[in-house]
Length: 209
Image (cartoon, rainbow, N blue to C red; front, side, top):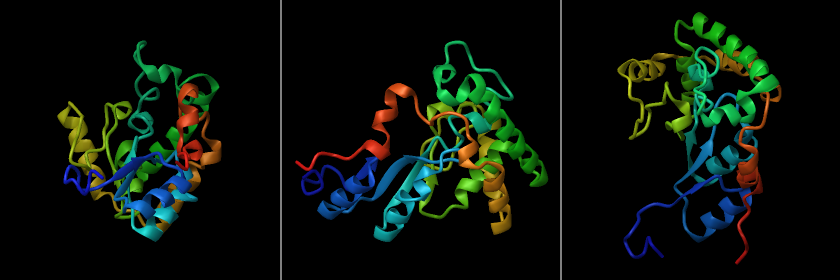
């Protein structure tokens, strides 16, 4: 094993199923999971997060701004013609128009909290627990979470904007208000491209041997 050989110290998994997590953790402690988690992608709250907290696994949340949507992608600013997001289920057609309404609700709440829309989206995620760490992803440009070791943002204003999310304090009532404004069953479109859908954690059981 790589751990025994001293080549790695910790083991993490990306998008594993519940069964895979249990089986892998029984062989060697799993330190963290990389899972998509944001205001419009909250499916892991029902099974993954409770299991991780039961056995002591942290969660690295990728696409914390919904692949840039809560940073203004396709709403405040248009998508470049060459952007892959133009083919994403949530960024085109009727789904996009439906999701723009959700963005407007969050933007209005951000005004009441005296912060920007991406700051409120990141602040919500930061309030989900100390065991959940948001990380940037290329689809979250231009406003990327900078709350991990790495940051890919190239603009100082976006860096400052993201850091500002640390100052946004939310009460239980405030967190509920945000969730109520963006119910997941009202999000338009699947969270992944059709060609990649079969690789999501819900279908990621590994073979027994």
